[in-house]
Image 1 (cartoon, rainbow, N blue to C red):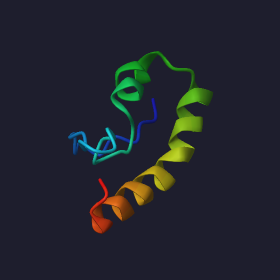
Image 2: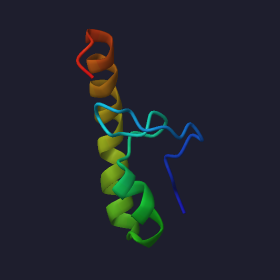
Image 3: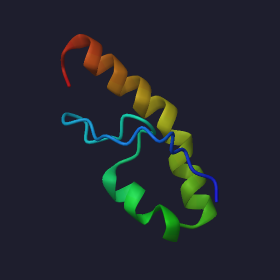
Image 4: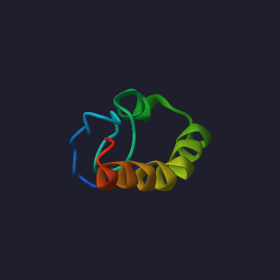
Length: 62
């Protein structure tokens, strides 16, 4: 099963996203029961999520 997990598991307080992979806790907990297409859909969103969270952190708006 493909996963974006980078073994850096910590949720950001402001965004509620994992610092390592960019998923929400709900996405992480249900990852194993999702269809391949749903996992791919979420994985396609992750780079933009992580970039937005990084920008927010740098600007102090987390």
